[in-house]
Length: 385
Image (cartoon, rainbow, N blue to C red):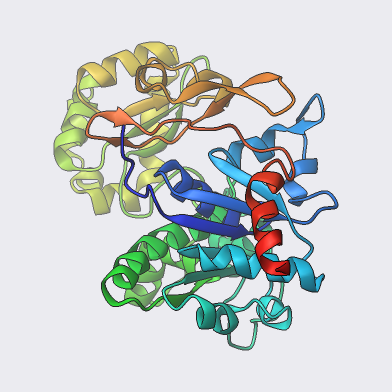
């Protein structure tokens, strides 16, 4: 696909670990030239996270494809000059330091906008650039705890648990990428950039719209329900004879199909189950009734029956199972990736398609400082002259 939507956009990424690098990778997948600025000693701390493939982190590789790497020590005045020189030719800078760090180094938004007025400067932090918690640090775990996610995750009456996927990190990265693309359009039209404030707490609350609206509408805190839904049933994980499966019948038409599949038409006349709201209210009783039937056959048989009836259902996959699913293979989402050390692994590429084509894997994740000579040497000559 040529050109990609963000081809010609230069992004400087001054980020570590997850939220910022994920944001940068989303832009890189769309064609942006993302230059990752790392500390000379060790670089992005994600580089040390296992699993290590002959010394190269597969975790790092999963968030840093299609980027170039340079090393700068931003406590060194000469290296800060090089960052400023990079910014003069850039459209976007992403950073995920604590608020105030970039300003103290002399490379905050105000300083860089003075030399590049159209710069879109995106700051991703735990709580935002201002406010009583702005100086508090945060990781995905603490933001899941603070945001309420852990209060609705897991089984009722059990200790709180976090979601197994780092929702706080990646929701902030998604919000950041969305905001950057919007601000780029405005900068192109007006010549004026912007400082984008992307708080992980706010992003995580933003994707919890159904839970916050439940509280606003009822005055009651949402509660953990395991795999069940507070307003719909049957809509959860069910036990079969040999395991478990997920099934979601979120409206009355699908509920009728469920009753046909389980050969229990009498449930349609049961006053407890005549609407999604009533089924949700009485879903413990409904679970007992349905599982008494489901435990008579294996998961694969129930999935076949529900799929034939048009009822959304799915196995409880491990990652090893879903990554070889025929749909994943059809979409070509898993592709080989050659690491800088020459080792070949696999990676999950962008799931998006534009006009029927997937976004290309243009370059592997970089070695630390791999592009110093290419990008920094010409600037050194200009800065020192």
